[in-house]
Image (cartoon, rainbow, N blue to C red; front, side, top):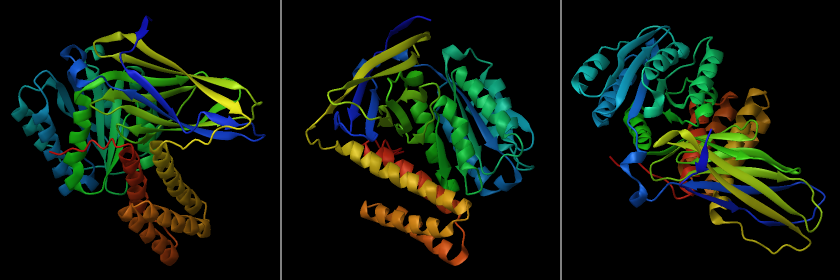
Length: 424
């Protein structure tokens, strides 16, 4: 496959460039940013129409306000799409129904009418909906469109999680993204995170049906301006350097996994840079050693989807007997601070699931203090409420888990000054 230099800027900011010669491993944080082109450099040739599939949970638990809000939000999203875009709509419970087969968005009233026909019944089998959606997405030549599946659900899927994850890997390999939004408190956030990871998609927590339109509109807005697709970060690491963790920060905060030294990051979209925070472990090194860490971004441009683009940078670390005192860049300080709060909340739940309520309570009390000190008052109140719940009932709430989990993700993106809020 032919390669060419990608027309983006790749910035790498380190928590420090020099380190002392110690006999223990050291941690360095790298903020890797892929900057989109200036608006003045963006041309129509780099934009593609959208090939979108909405996958709507119609199980019995969606009956009433939830399903009505989803249908209304979907209508408004269809109204925002252009007549060059394709849309398909699938509803599912324990079986799937193709409500709107893949069609050009040129008869919006007809699409609205079909949307309104969706009625709630049955259980929740997400694979049924995803499989039908993939069939509709695949009706179009994928290299001619921005292809994305948006899943909405309010419950756990039954017996088909492995099939869903296999399908997500398959669609990602073909350039199709998946985003997934959970409504209410009963859905499996870990499963949805795993579902979107192969394509670098987004998950979100919709606590109130009134928020459904906001989440859908923001996601569609990002997909409306795609500068590059299937972005992957690669790092061929020298001996003694290892990436311990990675967390995508913008255009939305999302945990990412890396396998075979590759991190799937999704798309460069809208005005926000594509940013990821890397936690790098460096083994003891001799004084005077220089370590080079090659970092490479690979992606496909909408204007030339068959040619893989690359950006390559070599980042260097120096080992010194007396490294200068360096002040960690404020953006990294803030991002790491919030990431540690996020991890603390994750550990609280692991402690609780393992039956160690004393450790969970102590950790949640500490998290409450950290959130309050950082100025995140609302999240601190939620953490404090969960502490009280554990003290009185010995349990944590699913709502509290999601509120703190997704709340800390949101403030991670805000910590970079990249909070592109939907103002409509």
